[in-house]
Image (cartoon, rainbow, N blue to C red; front, side, top):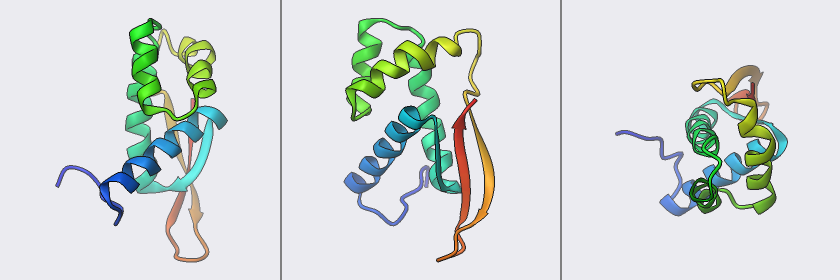
Length: 112
């Protein structure tokens, strides 16, 4: 299979993941379901690795994926410099319990 579909169409799934990544970088933590958090984590860590380069090409690459320009600015100016010495593992997933409506396992995805 390779990747999770979340019962969504391709465009909807990509938009959802882009929104979650944008929110993660803007707020530095998000609460979501565990499978979504795992997919968002892999995308976010790749974007941080790209942002650590700090050049114009890297900035444009991040602007292709992240919706808000201010969030990209924050990624390059404050988030990426914190992780210069780190070789990955920029985020953590903390389990917070089950959602009331459908008992989906909820987690907190936050930047370390």
